[in-house]
Length: 212
Length: 245
Image (cartoon, rainbow over all chains, first blue to last red; front, side):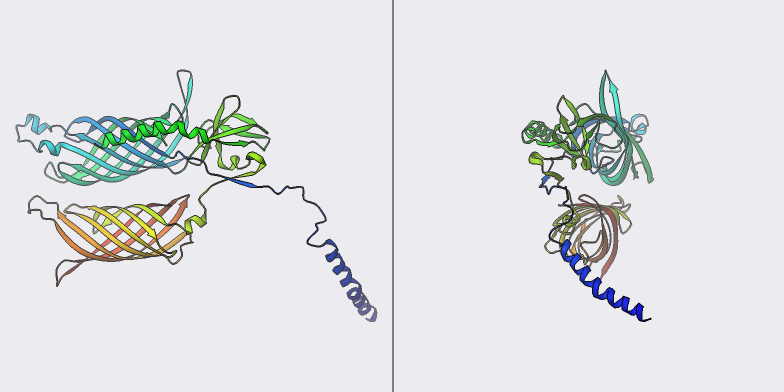
């Protein structure tokens, strides 16, 4: 009993100063091991980004019962990441005559200025299949993308809420130029032909855009 | 007119493109090698590498990937993480400027596009907010509600209180007013536009997604002052995205 107590006291008497000297010996100011890592300066680099894409397109658009007509459009996209983008789409077409107007002998449904149809959408796009294509011995990058969104269509003098969805292919001949081939569906409800019904309209277009 | 404007913008981009090359950033490869991908994305193959000690020239960034050129006519895309393992002139470590949580917490301007429903009609809205304090911002917004029987155009000014601006998922409260222009759609009744003053209150939540992007979800209750004795209540909910800068 006594010996154990003595040992404890001895440990306290000898151990603490030993610990204390060890601590002061190794000191926080002077490390035992010199780290071989050099302290370096950090250069913060701001890189000019080219996430915006702006361009024009032209193609054909079918408006249910009103025939297929040429369509002109513009697009502004922002590439959020390598797999996603947000896009604003604008387009205009002039619809033709319905079969009833053409052959049924009925009075024209729309005034000439009401035949001008425009659309404006905001869509989200997903680069589903990015990859490379080989054309004429050269390699280009591109991507097959899906996109969907909503917006408004001005049709028959009326502004309608519309949905748009489709897919497209983007081919980049250079780092800043892109060719687009798009196929999209415009869907909206209209009562222009009497009863309210959903009109499904197809558009195919070729586009040219620039990244900046 | 619009296509001409767009074309002018395009021409301007073309004209500006070569000017950027003058102020190129040069970096030295510090790892044993640096992978060059053929396109901006992890899916694209690595077909070339640049060895340690070689200098690369940074040309631009797209979707988080950086386009570089290297000696011997090599060109390719490098990930941000790989680029941060290179050295700048004078041996300094490279850190790319990025949007941090601090930038998100200190955001001043916010531009949002939200879509949803205004009393059953499809609603599209655009808003711009300025945070004059960490917890308070002033937002102006315009909206177009396209319904089966009537269309409405909304113009609002609102005060937004965000008690926790640093939270990645940050709730907020809205109170404001504005005007609502209502236009019946039907051809049977003589269509007459009507303007109403309105007040609204609501709640919402922001979620910081990536870089400068946020997702927003919002619910508002509007009171339209239809006449001296009569008020009309309308509800609005919408979801969408916003960017801050």
